[in-house]
Amino acid sequence: MPLEQATLKELISNAKNLTILFVEDDKPTREELIGFLGTFFPKIISAQSAEEAWDKYNSNKIDLIVTDITLPQMSGMELIGRIRQTNTSIPLLILSAHRESEYFLDSIKYNVDGYLLKPFDLEQFLSVISKVVYRLDMEQKILDYNKLLETRIEEKTYELETKYLYDPRINLPNAIMLRKDLAKKSQGYLILLDISHFSILNKEYGKVFANKVLVGVAKMLSKNIIANSKLFKVESDRFSIFLEADMEEEVQSYCNQIISFFDNNNIIVDDVEIHISFSMGVDKLRKDASETLINCEYALDKAKEFGSRHFEIYNEEDLDFVDKKESVKWLRLTRKLIIEDSIEPYYQAMQEIQTGKIIKYEVLARGVENGEVIDPNYFLQSADKLGLLTTITRAMIKKSFEYMQDKTVEFSINLTDKDLIDESLIMYLKTYLEAYAIDPSRVTFEILENITVIKNADMITQKLNKLREMGFKIAVDDFGVENSNLSRFLEMHLDFIKIDGIFIKDLKTNENNRAITKAIVSLANTLGIKTVAEYVKDEETYKIVKECGVDLAQGYYIGKPSPRLLEE
Image (cartoon, rainbow, N blue to C red; front, side):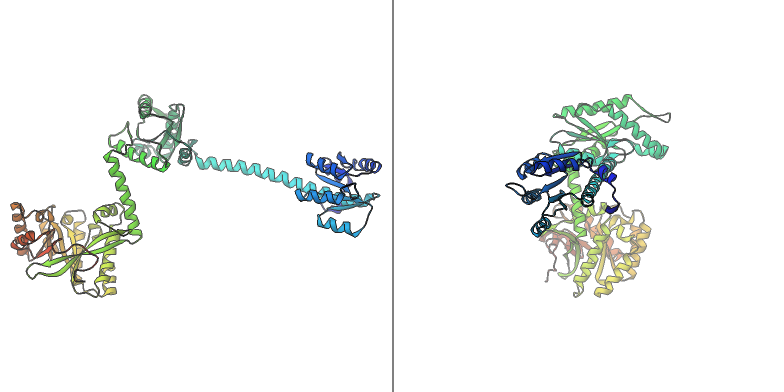
């Protein structure tokens, strides 16, 4: 409402809840004006000096101050200055018969809200006081509205937090709440429960029915929640229970109690009786809550190996757990090596036995982490699990092609079955053959012996023949220990057979392995295929493979894998 339209009735209504501090030293004037002000302000606190006013200001909740300027000892303007040091927003009105300019300047300095002149002029008084009361009324309404907003925000925040921290179907705290609670605990055990064969329920009865089963399981588990324990609904078909126990025996007893309870109590959903059992993984609370959760997963995996109705407690000394953790560690490191492009080609020489010349190198993948060289045995299996083997192969192709572009020596690269069924392999090779001007006759692709009997063998044979048409050579690696299809090898038109190192390592002492080596060489000669002996570690072994008629030797006796060629 515009200020000029404020009515006397509205002024009285708005001022009824305000407390005014009125300061006047002259008693008759003070009593007269209090009577006048009382028409509008039922709550008036009076003072006859600035010192008394200061004390009453500090001991009462004051909404508005009206003070005379001329007061004994401390002036009204000094009082205003002191008040403004502690409160910059309380309305201040000056009451005086004076019109000296110095007072007006001070009133501006202290942000005084109005100037009431004695004797009172009703129109002037209403104009000044209405503005102040209107402002106070608006401020109060804003405060009330803000409080209402704060209340609604708090309610909405609580609603959102509930949705965020609780499973909406079952009304149990969720995995996020579990982590928050674990962070506050110092000791106890966490039990991770996985409903056995829950996926079958999903497939047989549908998701709606399965969700009803979860609600029923939650109710039954709730009946088994003892003092100092708390039930959580985590992901999928899993629940967690935090148990504030000191001894492992208490946890074992509690897990057996849950197993026994569900053995003797079925869930009925839509007139269908369902038997529920769990696999459970348990770990004690660690300093890092994430470690506790991970260890429960390891323990759960082991429990599942024994079937339903079984629980396992994590033990850091158990070799099964150690191996699984080590495997996960290498999965993470492998992903990191691949993302950071930190898998590099190393080159191991192959010597032509008859001439003693280094005519070929095998490209071997090595990880490099903080200056440390990592053997492929640690990351290739992990890369296979991650579905990233082809990424490593491509890195070896690109980097070795780039390195070999200004050289003449031949080199070989290992291909997996996954590489050979990759439809983009041929295009990838053409791209980098052209980019680095590599003659394909310099490149041999090595495949494992068992590649002839695995799934997609026909497709792989076709791809290998396509590579030969492009000018590449083909070698079979680790020959002699795997099941293989010799007729398939004939279809591939192999250029090299690499005799498995298991036969070469102990040629000095094992006559059978010498006979096998000679037999493989004889077969290869018949087929017009050259042979390579791996793991030639010393001079004596070298002499034996030479006697056996092997064409090429590879091993530490010839040279260790290195990021550079031997002649560099």
